[in-house]
View 1 (cartoon, rainbow, N blue to C red):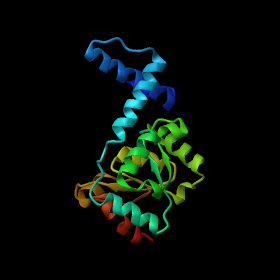
View 2: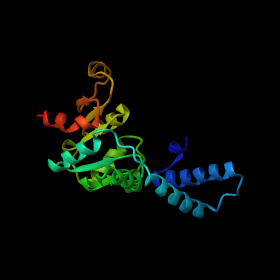
View 3: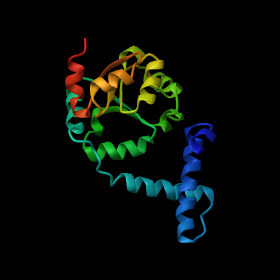
View 4: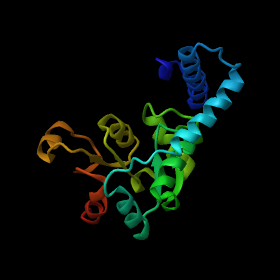
Amino acid sequence: MRLWAAGDYNDFQHTYLIDWLSGMCALLNIPRPPDEESVLLAERANNWITSQVRADFPGAADAIRLLWRQGHILYTASGESSSDLENYLGNMGVRDCFTRLYGGDLINTLKAGPDFYEKLLADSGVLPADAIVVDDNVKVLKWAAQVGMRVVLVSDRSEQRISSEVVMEGLLCTIDSLAKLPAALDKLP
């Protein structure tokens, strides 16, 4: 509900951080600080928490490094903030492989429809036909395909089952792990 009530990413994030801190204060039965202080405290806590995260998928960091060495220009397209992405990818040791870490904050747009990708493309200067979006969420990939981007689905379900369930323009292939992305891209025309 918070997502749909927000006017943009910044509005969503501001409300989310206040609500997040309010919930913790309520659990401890202590008063919540004023809004701006709550936002600053929540941002500091979130930064510390995300800087501790070590959750990369097996083979993902090696695949990212290989794609970068092959000359692919890499961006993220995440619903999370760019600062969270800085921490996650920094912890994986691959931050330097990315040109820009697009979270909703950099384009002030929620990842909730095709407009997210339109704004990301406009900001990056990348043409839709030159972009490949890799994700495990079919709905998100359909949004990317709607704006002319090519897409790769990551799914651990059998490829035959996936191909019968997912029919979308722009679908290049389905892989069962990010580790297989470089080989899959090498096979594309």
